[in-house]
Amino acid sequence: MKKGFVKTENFRRLAEAQKQVERRGAREAGLVLIRGHYGIGKSALTDRWASDSGWIFVRAKATWTKRALLDELAELMGLSKTGRNQEVQARIIGKLAVDGVPMIIDEADFLVGGSTATLLEVLRDITDLTGTMCFLVGMEHFPMKVAKYAHIASRVAQVVELEPLSLADVKVTVTAKSEVTIDDDVLPLLLSQSQGRMRLVLNAITNIESWAEANSWDKVTAQMLGGKSLCTEFTGKALGIRRKTGGVQ
Image (cartoon, rainbow, N blue to C red; front, side):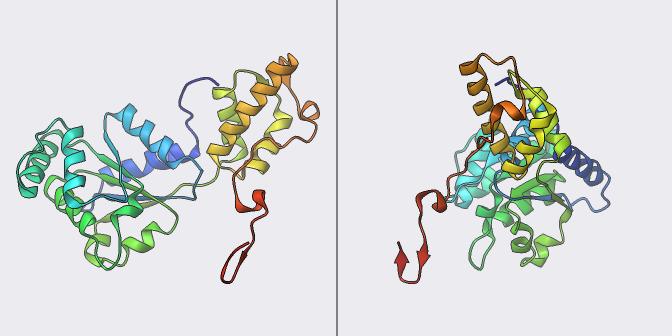
């Protein structure tokens, strides 16, 4: 598979959100919530977006404490991690106030847990004092979790819904990533079987490339694939697992 970044409709949605937040009125309203179903490519898209833009990208962890969050941000910014939480946070605020570099926090669902949102509070302090944009990437229900905390929700400038890939997105992806020519009649099959998930589309391209190599195909058509499953996803159904009250059988 070829290396490279695919600019899908979801990328354009993010770029538009960035423009809107840059024009915001309230300086402290710098939070952008990005939500979407698993497998549609949220992490890969936002990671590459941050890399190309020179932004800060960090993946939240289930084990994160306030200190762990601050330490990871400080390390990414080349700052000292010594001292108390307040001292590390002050260094981060000082640097962002000067540089104005936006942040992207992936797996942001880990920032909210139980009856508190202490990790979101840490980020709120940083964005309030610096005016820095902060993009929080989570699952489809993530905005509803944030909405429980009105003082943080009031700082949300945009909610961006990342959608499953369109047929046009699949075509762009195949053109950019596949080492073998894939006929347009394969694209609807790719879209249908992947349900618009980038992760599965990329897996399918790898499978098609393998079949093409094994059969010395220069171009792959739907007829040549003969009804093959282009991409598979691990689920309990694959193992014949059925859930019943009292256990798994």
